[in-house]
Length: 307
Image (cartoon, rainbow, N blue to C red; front, side, top):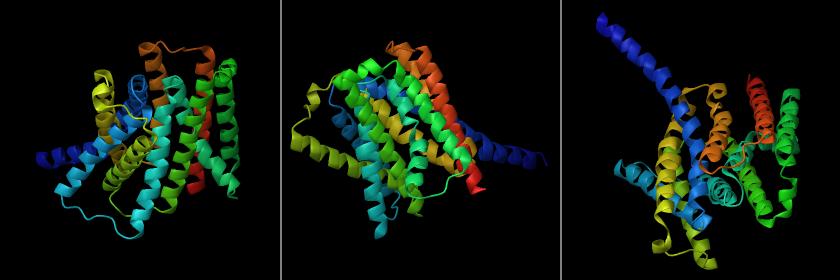
């Protein structure tokens, strides 16, 4: 009898406790990756950092699945994986990392939180009917962005700042398109293995671009701090946290799992202010709060429409 009770408690912990723990891990560590990216791109080309990070991350994933003799994708699965590698890694991940070379990590993280708003806007332009709450969330979210940028209006005269903002916004757009494409082409193929293949493909494409433009630096010229950043991004950004994220997706309701999207920017803003002395102003606090409120309303509208 005691053994049955212990087994029941253990099963309940595994079914609820571990997914919640995974979600907490994602909520915190994906927020810290903005800081690691900011530090890494201070000392080397951003796209080279991304290419190295994705190549090492891919090597870890692929080595594991090749050791396990996992079946490789077939037919149209390759097409889906290739398109997602372009949208999610060559464009979204690479551009967001490049963007924080010119803007604060906190601002980059807040812009990164706009993905659900873009998903709603893209769906609207595609002729899909949206419930009132989604429209309200969209307006509220972009109002928050306007509040944030109000004190940065003069910064738009600085070319590097403009470039960083453009890169960051485009990165969220491509991730939104990747999200919609994933929903449309949802495959039964192993998501972890797919992730490794996407990273590998994207790293090769980025290395080709760096070679063609002669914009990379020699590995010996990369300082130790950037290697530490790459290592952190590989372990905590590309491997452990992605595994935790997919695990949480598979075991938690969408309304709970979406919490990480609200916490990541807060972690990035606070750590950016503490580590890099990035400005933590009233407009950033107020605008960030309004933006996250809009994100909450959009997510709630999506859940209501599914019901």
